Length: 331
Image (cartoon, rainbow, N blue to C red; front, side, top):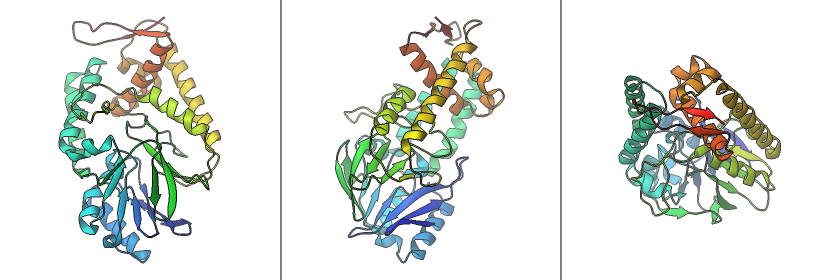
């Protein structure tokens, strides 16, 4: 736990995920506000409860919960906190219908991801195993009703800080940052992290009409690069990320992330020099055994980079073969 500035406190909540602890922020003001919550687990709830108490408050005192994006380590406890405190939950507009029926949304997420992985070379039995693992993580999320839906450019008071919400899709379709126009302080969720890249993971399109039943794949990496470029042009001060320590000089970090993307794209393109490969085979060239151990993350990376290479007319995608598997060809 750390007081970042007077009245704004970072609470690092434990998670069962490889990413480790997730940062949530308790912001004092006329309305005590919690930004993100941690996953829906007893360990996470106990840690959050103790941290809030040590700051002289109680979970019952929270007057508003604000969510940055859809991932379970950020939203899982929202319903419990809201039920305990009576606080409304403010969230990005596209997140409202998604969290209104968490299990249904998660079912569709898993179906889309499994279909993409199977079509791109992962054995059907392994795909089903990955799907079962994904189902096990579902308990860390929960359905919650939106009290307020916010869109790009909306003003919002977080605690006593006047901020503006900016949509930054990529890491997920619903990623949103909150920026104080006066000081440049940014509460960024997972849009920009200091130590690790924000994986633009396989996600479904969030339909603007609120239709959550689509299985259309969201082009995560192209959207993320566009979002990074928008954030790079902003005048920011301290950035408060969803994982890791606060940092300054967002431009330097964004330039590093963009350079890393270009480097990885070149490596993936080079892997196709000897002939067509599936996404699984490209992942094996880049990460070796890690590709098989973490198929969801590595598939997300390969598919995302192939989306960009196709946009640049450097790669094309073959039609599915007799097994329904597609390959990528260097042009």
